[in-house]
Amino acid sequence: MKRIDTSDPGEKVVNGYHVCEAVILGKNEKQPISVYSEIYSCKSEGFVKKNQYTMESIDTVINVLNRGYDE
Image (cartoon, rainbow, N blue to C red; front, side, top):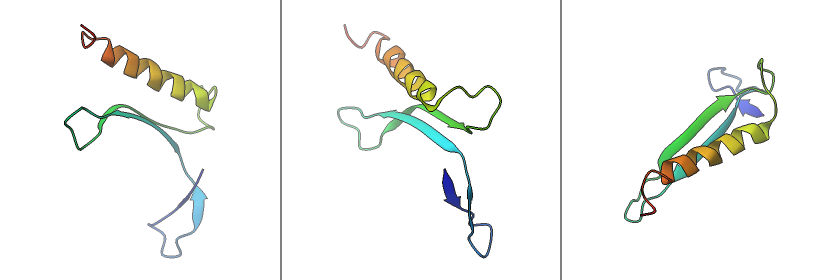
């Protein structure tokens, strides 16, 4: 993933990090509520694949919604 380094006066494009974010929106809410947020690098130790973070975010949302909201 490329990003602009705004701390550099030349604003060079440099390598950055990936972000996986899952949010929910309540019926009467105007702002989304973050239920999962993970910043990661494909070059970090223990990295398996990007889909791992997507699946973790889905599992987190399922667990949040299964806390008695379906009764």
